[in-house]
Image (tube, rainbow, N blue to C red):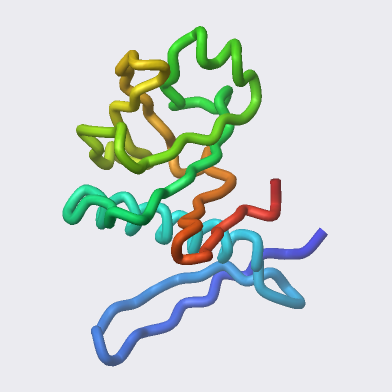
Length: 139
């Protein structure tokens, strides 16, 4: 097992001290990727909150349905016991960041329901129009 070493450094431009964890013999790239994906997901939801989604675009989010913090109706969890993909395009409203995830009202078969998706539960976020897919390959 690798030993974790804490490395402290100072950002001279911003006069801030930061600490990162480095494994002896290399960086913890899985952790670095998780943090990067979290920021991508967070920033994407924040942009949707502020500006909406452009007409031709849709955001497809695939997430684990049984994770802690997921809010999804029992019937949807029954239909999708492990993963579900939701599309943010026309039938969504009231999207807002809620700590380490976000809440959004989605229409499933004409019925509106509030869904909570923790950022850590997301395994893929895609915008087909932009030909961009962010995927957590550690799943």
